[in-house]
Image (cartoon, rainbow, N blue to C red; front, side):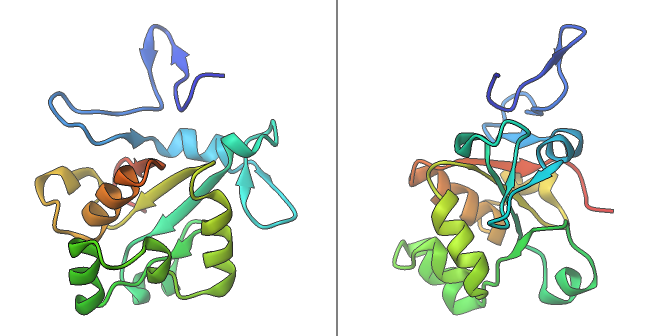
Length: 156
């Protein structure tokens, strides 16, 4: 099974990447297919149950937005200004921005083996401003060798 790519009618419907933009995107449709099966450990896996196909969704929106609605199984990433600066400077590990212990455990178990999907209220424009929370997380996770994607489009 190709990594995040399904070919339908000769085009890639799951991976979106605007020309000249190195940011890896995934579509809501792809994410839906990956979240169809939930393991007993709380992380979402593809229907194969293969750890390398496990997906962890990370919500980078405000706490109010997260509490009002979020993707089932998503963990919230909170970044106060001081932590944002420390993350930018490389003095803060990404796991430190996850407050929930269960979420931190899930992150640590999938950090290098699964696919991390980030989203916020404006996921489609992070390449324009790499200083945003989602932009910094994307860069840090990529530098750490993680398989990370941005959810294409705005959450509804």
